[in-house]
Structure formats: C-alpha cells, structure tokens
Length: 186
Image (cartoon, rainbow, N blue to C red; front, side, top):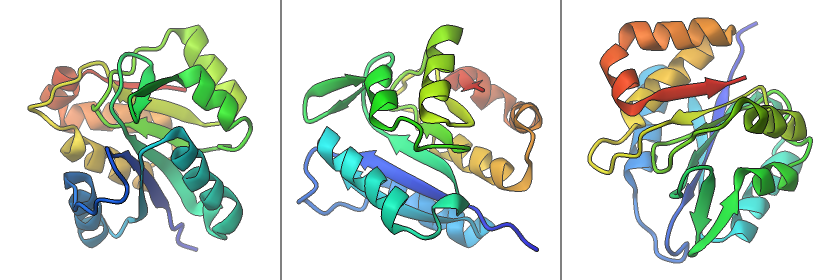
C-alpha cells in the first residue's frame, strides 16, 4: 500500500480579498508535478482566518490524517507570527490548536525566524501534539527558503525518521541549510 501524504499550506497575506498568485503557490504546484506531493493552499490575513482554515482542515477534510506537513508562510519576528499588524506568539498558536495537530510536522518558511529554547519547543509539541516543528534561524528577504522547503517536503514524503531527514537535507543542501540556519525540533 502506497502512503499518500499531503501538505497544507497557509500563507499570511495583507488582504485575502485581493487575489495574487504568490511564489509559494507556484512552487506548491511545481512540487505536485515534480514529486507528486499534493497540497492544499489557503491564505489568511487574520488570526481568525488562520483558526478557521485549520479548523476546516481538521473537521471538514476527510483526508486530514494524510496531511503530514502544515506549512506556514507568515511574517513575524522571533517566535511570533504577524497577521494584520498583530503579533501572536507560538504559545498562543499552540493553545489555539491544543491537541489538534497530532503527528504533524509544522514547518515555517523563512518569512520569520524560528528560535526556540528546548522548553519552548517541548511546550509547543506537547500542547499541539505535533511530531515536530521546523523553520529557519535566518530571515532573509533576498533568499527565499522555498527551494529548500520543497526538498525537505520531498524527504518527509520518502523517509520516516526525522534524524535521517535532517541528515539527508544537510548532506544534499549543506550550504543552503547553513546559510538559512535550518532547524527542526522534535
């Protein structure tokens, strides 16, 4: 039996009523064609939109268990995300989705820095039930993490062991992993 995994991408945008084809959306389409990894893309501009989108995924999508990765492309600072000029801490996000992300990998694009202490990471994982949280220690507007993200998603689809995924990612993309400071907490 072939396992079919999906990615659920939620991108923070200035206004959901303005339709724009983003780099993220284009690259998710490329991921589907190149690696046969399907995704659902949604955008949001408020915390309510974030909660509504993830709630719809949780309760309305019969394939929720097949979503291995929740890909969050949102601006922010340190361990906060910013939606509609409001900052929300990862602790608030964890409490919002308490127990609802069991077994998922929560991955942040390099739109924001992810720099958790071991206690902060463990709190997020314990509260949400997530398998891992990953992202980057460097926020660089000139260099998008999308290409490394795509490779990471493909490895997550092929391999089960998180350590093996990180080792393979660094082996094949060492310079970019170091430059963007890829991080995975589990």
